[in-house]
Image (cartoon, rainbow, N blue to C red; front, side):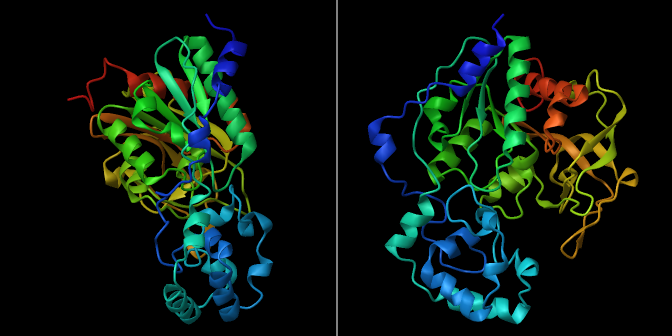
Length: 371
């Protein structure tokens, strides 16, 4: 059996990108040619002096009240997962102001400099990954351009590394979007999205991931991987995850709540208690993933915590799934909204759920999604 040290070395990997890949500029980033609008990520507004001037003229002084993690123009930046439309309450923008800003922004030409700046937070570096022995082979991915909660990311790495060490599974990690290509993906059985926030894949990388999953690949996402206020890849949010984030409590940020196991006959649920309590940051979603055809593994008992409101929207869902699976073509996905607190990654129930999710996602004995 491999030592924990050897797994961690494999996780870090040997990422030696070719000189050509390291210097080749990205030109197929998703928003490269999109007109400026109130639906543009804030980071692209801040990157353009002309666009920022338009907004400053309409709502003078309000940008200066935003925290640095929103206004910074180098990823990771919260500005890459917010828009003026979504952030209007934060900035106190009235509907008529928003309409005037949108009209003015849309008249602004998108220059070559704008296109280059928009693509700089993406990469096309294909790392040389030292894929360890053991099956399944797992790619742990953590390129983040939005909100990076480093303690959660590192705790998740340690948890998945521990699982791989116990099970003699092959695990390697990367933060390069260039790893998401056909040649690399075919070496792996499952890709884990480790608290990914922000738009991180180019158009060609998006196509590679989608085709790999639909043809039988397995995807696992934890917590922040479905926690952005705005998404710029509809397939990811609406088809792969199947639910869009609406918010989490702010006044009582972390709360104890009761988790209720629903799919007791599912392989992921085996060995888990019917219910257990956990202190966490509890996500709510605009619609239940049940409505998009997901198989719900566990729900949250809203009577055991205070959902509060997010902006002007209630976070109370009624039917409140927090872990679910779905078939995507011939592939499988699992997502859990648990995973903000680093302590959750040593919670025995949650770790058992993650371990079983990997086994199910790559399991050849389970015929669902394979027919």
